[in-house]
Image (cartoon, rainbow, N blue to C red; front, side, top):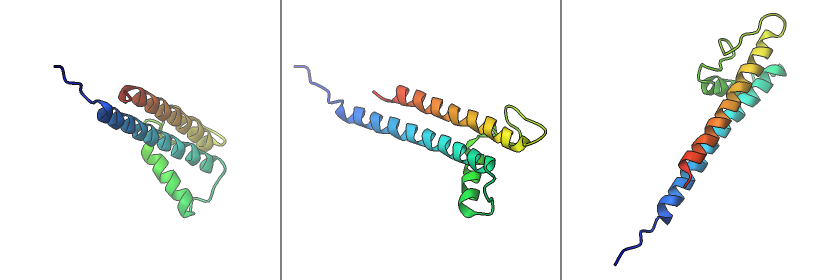
Length: 108
């Protein structure tokens, strides 16, 4: 007789891994968005929380979406704000797209 294989355990693991991957990507996007907002609004960078958010955002931008040397560099008035909103905004979207793709690939 053929034996039925219980795949419920592996499906549950894959579902959990997909949720974890999506959550990590969403949190990275959230840090980029909040970091950009902090810089755009001129938040006090000496504040521990603001400093932590900007440091994490600098880490998760992966250098590709850097606010100093990103995909696009603006010059002139408010260049730092424009750079951070454009590059970190793009980075946040990229993290969300990557998270959704990972979710679709991993989930059963």
